[in-house]
Amino acid sequence: MIDLHTHSTFSDGELIPAELARRAAVAGYRALAITDHIDLSNMYHTIENVRRLTDKYSPYMGIDLFAGCEVTHVPPGLIPDTIVEARRAGAQIVVVHGETIVEPVERGTNLAAIEGGCDILAHPGLITPQEMELAAEKNVYVEITTRKGHSLTNGRVAAMARQFGTRLVIDNDAHAPGDLISAALRKAVALGAGLSEEEYLQAEANSRALVEAMVARL
Image (tube, rainbow, N blue to C red; front, side, top):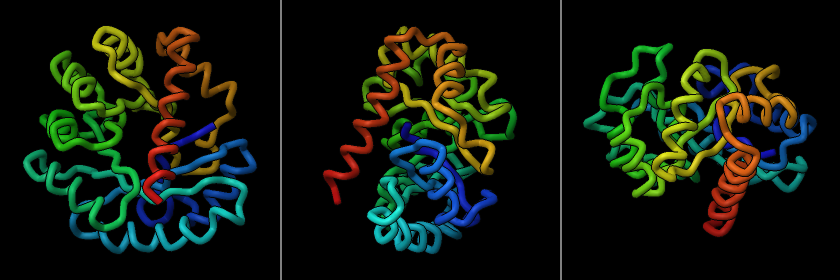
């Protein structure tokens, strides 16, 4: 398994990065991106410190670790520049906190994230057909999430991705040990969202492709 959207104590997660990585490895994950919530106030501090750990600990922990970030509740007009700045700060993968229906995310966030070229648009809620089509055109991956609340709109995301050929990934959005689910439950969530067996396997392949791209940039 691969998870490209997780949180540590550098934002609102319960585990320090080393324990998050250890628990993920024991749970069967082979690659993990630590993508703590950031805005301009904490971006450099968070990414630089998490990357110190991921760069050094990966060879010793039995899991490939990457330092990313989740651009969160940033005004839409500033999201594209924030994505660029996050990569400058050392983020190996940039996730944007999409317009989930269970949080007051500002309208326009999904579109700004896609136009800004983020790697993954997380839990995009009631994403529009135009946004999903643009994500396909710009090679932005869209997330099927296993996290409670955010997952309520997985069915819409899956159906639209099929319509427009948008690439999907499956992520936990893990904040606590119990969020690191089994491979069987991960697959069940994907199929429950309406993905076919073939589409589920393609989503897993998409995660592998993102990992391979990050490794190639090392």
